[in-house]
Amino acid sequence: MMGCSYAFFAGSAWNSIVYLVEKNKVGTALGICSSMMNLGIAVVPPLMGIIKDNSPELDYGYYWVMRLSCLNASLGLGFCIWLYVYDVKYNGGILNMNVE
Image (spheres, rainbow, N blue to C red):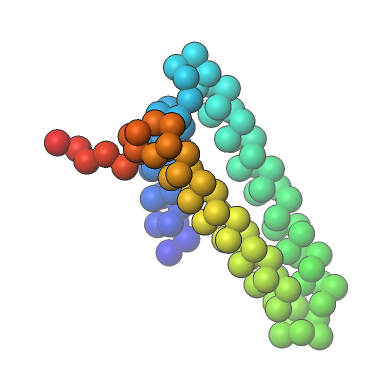
């Protein structure tokens, strides 16, 4: 399930960057997005390990790890909603167009 989820994410997220930035700034935008994703991959798993190791009394250490995962997912959903609103307001909804 994680692999399928990431495949759908990658198939849409990286392509949407091209529609949201000016043509002469696409490389910079892709670089910034890659850096942010790598930062999350480098910071969140060790943070989860630290949280799990320091809270073994609650659900074998997974109580706060699940809360961090929920926070991470909520932030992702919030950014998706923000991207949708931004696209509709400034780009005329180009990311939500039908292919015909």
